[in-house]
Amino acid sequence: MKFNTSYIIAGSLLVLGAVWFFVNNLGEETPLTVSTPATVKAEARKSIPTVQVRRIAAQEHPNVLELYGQTRAAREVSVKAETPGLVAAIGVVEGARVKKGQTLCRQDMNARQALVDQAKANLRSVETDLNAARVLADKGYQSQTRVTAFEAQLDGARAALKQAEIEADNVNIRAPFNGVWEQQDAEVGDYLSPGMSCGLLVDLSPLEVDVELTEGQLGLVERGTSAEIALATGETVTGEVAFIEAKADPSTRTFRAELHVPNADYELRAGVTATVRLTSGLTLASKVPTNVLSLDDAGNVGLRYVDAADIVRFTPTRTIDEEADGAWVTGLPDGARLITTGQDFVAVGQQVIADETYDDGRTQNVARSGGNPSSQSAGN
Image (tube, rainbow, N blue to C red):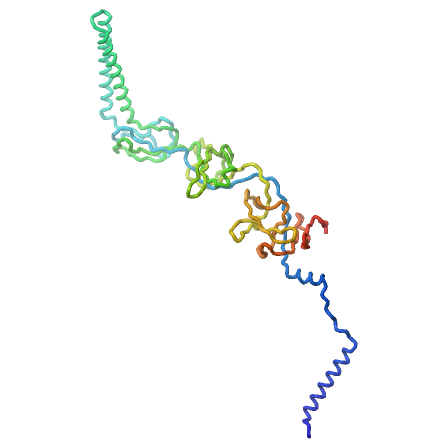
């Protein structure tokens, strides 16, 4: 039987390679991997995320409520005619400041002056008759009853004159209070019936600001509370709570609060958007960076922090004040290790490795179970 030469050569090379491998590895021990608690823990930690935390201490801070509202006039009245007649003159121009009692519009007198003159003449006639009756009565030529009748006529004549004078004066439509002649509704020559408007008078002193209080804020504000008010027109003024509604709005469940702002010079305007900052007492709060605030699954605003076992927790918070470098919130446990970096990549209930940040920028790993940096040197 003849063998193929190529098969013989390939087999010889295979045998020589196996012999060479066996000779070179003779006497060497194959390394054996042994699992220990330390290696198991190291492997497990490779899968645990690391977050940056900062220990936050609570402290007393003024409880500040930031509310939004609008300014409005203390009162505004449509000044109306009391008697019929044509408008004969307009006493002021729109935008002018007026005093109480100043004539704004004047109607035509027509026959009113004649009625006044007639009432005066009738009064003089009755006075003459009364005087004559008294003289005759004193001499016994006239009874006292006749004198009494003339005295009654005199009272009636005086009343008629007073009525005629009032009716004549009603042509002068006057300002019922100090204010600004905001809008002119009638022109010279217009006919005004009783109840028709001559124009709008607005009182801006004090200026009022209306805001809405929620049910939770209601107990923090009371009458007399001072407030800082920033107006959209650029002014910042100080006001005071003058009124809080006793009954909530059924549609919003909020209570209207009214603030008064001094405005004797009428420089401030009505209808301007206002941001109101009310300070009410002191509250134990924590100052945190605003970028760490987040939402839970229910949509509540709050913070993620790490508990003593390095488990991520969430707590709802309420912001009571905001500053340029952070927000003051309530609801965070005192001394909690707040997650400042990585909070968006971990879930509530998850185990993490926590690196704590100190005020000077140094960090300390506190990722052991039940880690507490107070038991380690801050200088390490």
